[in-house]
Image (cartoon, rainbow, N blue to C red; front, side, top):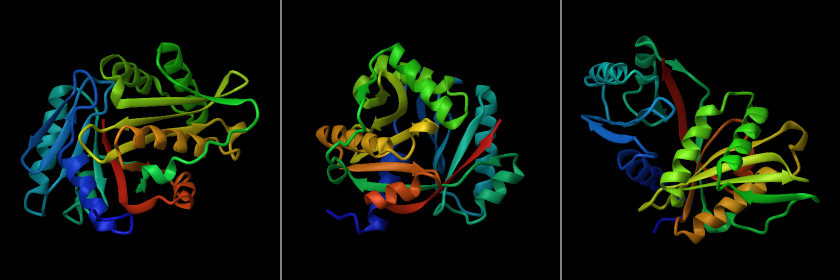
Length: 261
């Protein structure tokens, strides 16, 4: 088995297992294969969008038009998740011409789960707690809105859906300082694959720089390794990428969400 120094193997594995082989990620969701495209469709609060495409300069425009028609019929906004190695080379420009708006580019990083599952070190008065109920989900939403300044209502609905329907495929964890939630993150476990995905690590401003983000990475890595997932995957924003690379995460490519309303 190739190791962490074989970036091309890891990228191919990620594409095969999580993109071309994607599975629905919540109740009422479905994964469909439409020619050279794999897409995810669900309720309005779910993540809707294109996960993978194998296109060239001759097939790209028709595929873009077909996805626009599909999601327009569904009545939901959606995202085309474009990776740095996807073709054709000008697919991003074609998406913009079709009315998509690019958001911040992130970096796809991977790491060995067992290697990241180190000793948890927490500041005095801080404890970690797994989320299992609606109150815990409410606290996750509260932390994310304070940390990122965005409306996280849909995230809360998706997390409640997963905890109710398939709790073995999602782990959410809170860091509480004297009982007050100050950091939150979640992990999606992809059955039948090598991967677990780390998502949404956010810390409120006054608690940044105290090791909470690192602690939540280690906690989730331990859960992933215990459940048989050897690799961690992160779509890292520019703020978290340096932290994760210092921890040993390896960059594979970039990913940019192109959003269509």
